[in-house]
Length: 149
Image 1 (cartoon, helix red, strand yellow):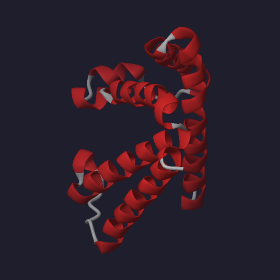
Image 2 (image 1 turned 120 degrees about the horizontal axis):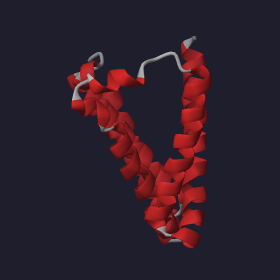
Image 3 (image 1 turned 180 degrees about the vertical axis):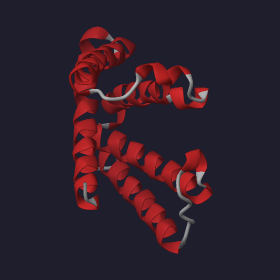
Image 4 (image 1 turned 135 degrees about the vertical axis):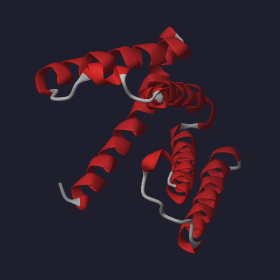
């Protein structure tokens, strides 16, 4: 797959994550915040189980032999989904999503810079630093429009 297709795929993933936040928030008004997160993960588990049964070529049993830190992704996803469920009604969808993306960019730059988790090292340079500054300014504008309009 070409890099352009990977970019398109991740943009689609971002669109879906941005859509997931208000949907889960609406669900939480009926069933509760943590219950909404549980339902979201349960439906996702059913979907992924179906995909693995039909298309899976890997080995689920190999999960028993990997380093334990590689198994915390689901826990991190739980915090992500629950935090957006809690934040959306208070700060709005755009502010919640923008803040989430900013957090992802910040940790991504740190992971790249130090080569954590076995990724290729990409040093922090002035362009990446400028990108962070631009995002912080953007976040201020997004929040300002919500709270100071």
